[in-house]
Length: 239
Image 1 (tube, rainbow, N blue to C red):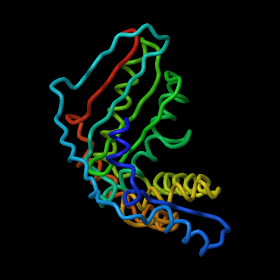
Image 2: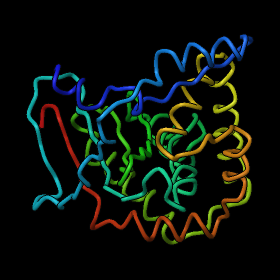
Image 3: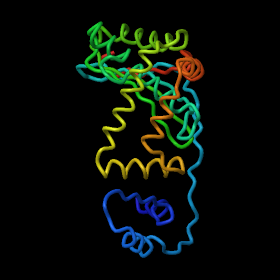
Image 4: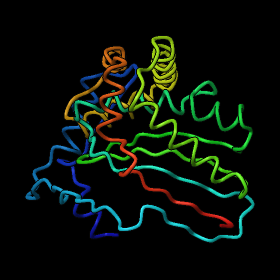
């Protein structure tokens, strides 16, 4: 643990974000005093991650649980600064953000076979993952997986309606603004975007990027990254 701290945690490798009403000159003076000390350390670069597809597309983990947990996803390679990152974000919104989203509405409300479900797109420095999950009783697992694969396939074959796309964008943008109402949330947002993208991405800039996404973009990106043969499934529970 100490070796890890020594390797990564030093002034030149730290991003500091301050949000609020404060005396700027006093802050800069303190930062120069404590964080501007010379260091012989060179910036550390993590080795690039190389993912290899597993030989088995379905992994089953037996566990004595009341629910069977299902995760279906893939490695997309869409990283922090990838041009398609905002598009795949909206795809996740269409499938799993809010009670009216496709996966949640179908599994929870229409078929009433899921205890809960969600869809996420995670981006990292040199890759990304896209996955959906849900909790089901054992007799409903096959039906749930069928629905998940079916909704992914629809995105690759059909054009999303204008109303559905608009709703997904509004939900995403609204959640972003709500989540950034406090100074600490803003500070975390600014420091994270600067550390990962090398720039401060404002909420307004994110809003503009999301609003640019078209229905044609959704279909193109779904076909490129969410092919059925690339999707892997994890099932954990009484299976």
